[in-house]
Image (cartoon, rainbow, N blue to C red):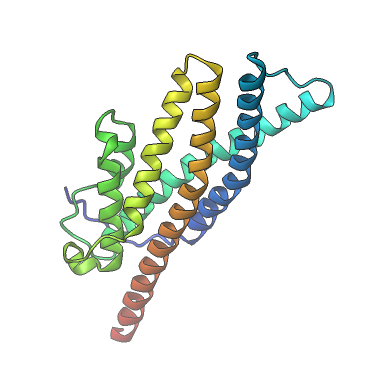
Length: 215
């Protein structure tokens, strides 16, 4: 499905915000791992749920939950916005014959079953089209893409187990795994985003310079 697009939209600010939120998610994930490990250790050694924090520590837990929620939602929104923009810009740089539109590059994340592979294919297409817009189908996908998607699937699977866990121990372990995987996942995605941004900006500057020479 091809949608003709004209007018490259500079993704620099969006890229900076997206990477910033991804970086911010890393220390928060590490703290969440520590908290889940505490819960697991307590339940494994006492057979009882971990005691709730009291006094000023209870307030700290609430304060910690707020930035976690903000960063989690902000990261998800910004990553999806970045994917939409990257697909749009690949088309604006001259990429044709692309299967995924900007809307569906994002939309497939919300379609059950298909979201196991369609978002990966859309990101793969974006990376190849950003490398060489004119004949992107001849290019290979970056080697980091399978790692990124594998980490995403494993993290999502661990999150699903955490939500449906029947015991405290299973919930704590699955949450530890989910949060631990989110750290390399964020780092790999940051690298992919940086590479796509650099490639698209290089093509844009080259095209802009060529157009200026012809004027």
